[in-house]
Length: 440
Image (cartoon, rainbow, N blue to C red; front, side, top):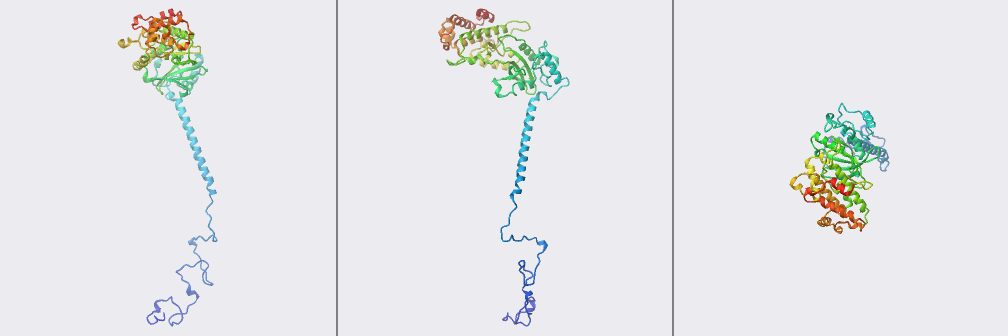
């Protein structure tokens, strides 16, 4: 600065102080403080303190140690509470949805209630009066073949079931109770309130006759069939909501005759000779009943006689199933069933030219079933047929019998089977004549 003494203008630097210059004032302690430069708190010059403004909101050091963060223990209970609430709401929602779905299924057929519908109390009283375990409520508006008071000789009320009872009997049509399916129906096992076992055949509405009068007439035919060798009809139910008709039959525990064919030696399903003879006689009696005219029962052609349609009860008595069922079905469904009959050899040869089912076409199918019972096979070969014609027992008898049969009975059954399967329908006997020939 001394070197600049001549050109240095001190008056332009009023903040300078020092000694040795005439124009500068002498420096003191307060001149070392720079008001524009922040000082460390508490480190001011001797006797000089500077306050921190309240608005600065400075965080002071944590005594040279890392400052502690907020504790996680305070957030734990909140997180647990949130999780519990979410789980509880999920459970409540799931339970509510399941209850809603079940109620919707149970009450679907009752969604539209007509004014003249019977009350629950009225229905219970009517059930006790009639003695039937299942008397239905009136149907909802929609598909009801019994509308307008049509009862056809009064059979309808004692045969009508309601959908809720059918669903309960089958555990809401559980797959565990499914006995079998076809291209137009499904059959379930179920139990009534009294504990009796039933078989429920479900048929889609589109497979049934569209005319209510014809459909009801067919039901009347089914209800009129009562014979020891026919599966008994317990009742029916028409569901608008499901679009199905349910036929309720007595349950037959031992399956069908088809399961007794093509079995291996030593299998428990191999039928004894006396049982086979009894089965043939029972089928013949049931078919003779169908073909005959009875009081309140017209002559009826089964149209689908086969080993599959012969079911066996716990006493090994044969019962014909689906008798008269074609009276409820559309022609397309009836004709579709012909494919299976033709494949198994049950279809009479004249059907290809006439296109008609007759009693003699039933007789032909009966003869095929008799051959199946004799040989124990599903496929009836030409060797079996010729053996029946020539009474060569070794050609048609089941080897699983190991000679435990009566030859004269075997020869008689083979001869009957051969006559029943004659190419010419007029050469076939009637079922009444077959029953007489069998001595039953």
